[in-house]
Image (cartoon, rainbow, N blue to C red; front, side, top):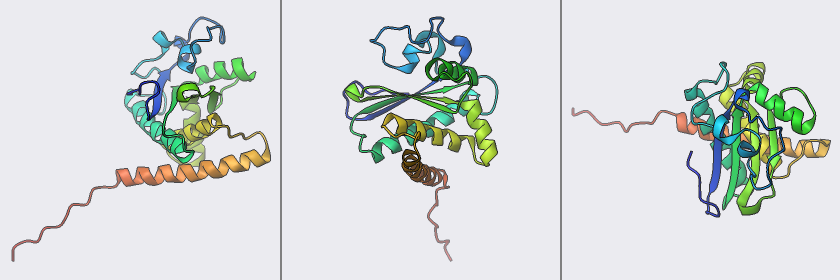
Length: 211
């Protein structure tokens, strides 16, 4: 994934892969204040992040499948940022992880010793850095099967949801949940239309046969 230079006028969405077996040995949260990204602060940058998938075997866990999911994630996050007028300069990191990784983060930062589908870690926005989103691919696969749509659509939905949290949306109150759901549904429909348009077979112009 290409990354824009700090302060560049572009949206930077970086997708990373991580598994619990490669977590840093340091307890969560005991890192210096100068490392703002989730991949650096919580997942042990040098050991847990690579271009190859390290998520445990399961739906969407192969390198090719994860790369495909990452493409959908980048497009989904960019749609959110563009819709919010934040496309001039913004940076978001998304981690596609296994259940154990998400469970450890959920326990450390929210006090819930169980996995969840998506976690959002907002930053202060300095230099365009909005924050980090962590998605459990196995949990997304379970939810996709339950509702009857593709894993790629479910992961895109979770990326949209997490990015909206980075932008300040909340779903703790009925009013906030309704507002967030409306924006989320609209952006997911737009993502799906764009995806269908990209996947549509190209129509070749017909040529007349000589009579």
